[in-house]
Length: 294
Image (tube, rainbow, N blue to C red; front, side, top):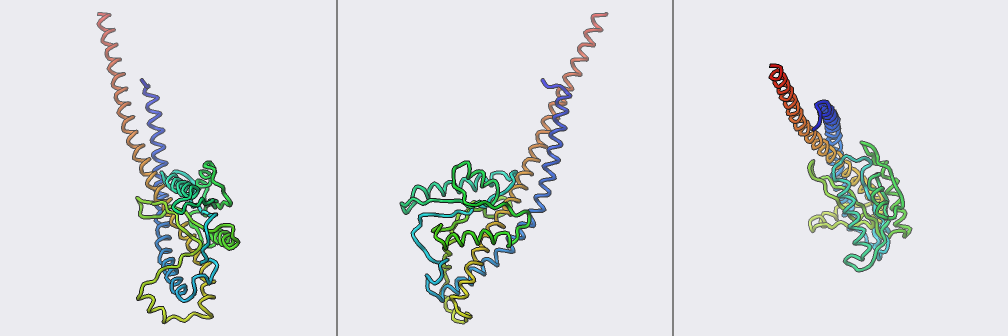
C-alpha cells in the first residue's frame, strides 16, 4: 500500500498537470475563435470566386486552358495538410488514416481498375512523419504557417503543383485536410484540385450570364483566374485544417483537465483512507501497550 507521502506527491503532480492542461485549454480556446473567424470569413470569398469561375468557364470551350485539361491518370500529386504539433486528439490519426486508405485504393486501381502512383506533398510535420513511416513517397515538404496563416504562405505550394501539373509530372493534383464542421466535429476530406472542375451553373444563372462582358476576352480572364483559384483553394484547406486543429486541441485539453481532476479526487480518497488506517493502527498499538502495562 502506498504511503501518505507517496500519495501526497502524486496528488501534487496531477494537480500541476491539471493546471497546465487548463492553461492550454484557455489558450486553444482563444486561438480557436481566431481560426474559426478566419475560415468563416474565407469561405464566402472562395464560393464567390467559384461562381465567377463558373460564369467565365461557361463562355469558353472546355479545353481552352491547360489547367482545365483532363488526361488519363497515371500519377497523382497529393497535398497532405496536417499539424506540426500533437495534443489534438485523434485529428491527425483520422486524417492520415483517410489518406492511406485513399493511397491504397489508388494503388489497387480503384473503380477504374488502373493502378495510380501517388506522391505526397506534405504541409505539417505530423503528416510527413506518418506518411514516411508508411512508405509513401514524399516529393516536397512545407512547414506549418504559425497561428495566422497568410495567403502569401501558400503561393509557393500553388506554384509548385501548378507547374508540375502543366509539365506532366502529375496527371491530377489532390488535397487532403481536416474540414472544420463545428467545435466538436472535424471531418477528413480528400478532393481534386487540378484539373480544375468546371462548376455547374443553373438555368437561371446561365440566362443572366449574358449580361457579363469579359475584357480583353473570356480566355484571358480565365487564364488569370484559374491559378488564383488554385491558390485560394489551398489557402482555404489550410484555414480549415487550422480551425480543426485548435478545436481538437481545446477539446483534448478539456478532456485531460477533467480526467486530471477526477484522478485528484480518487487519490484524495486513497489519501484519506490511508491516513485513517494509520490513525486506527496507532490507536490500536497505544491501547495494546496500555493494556500490557496494566
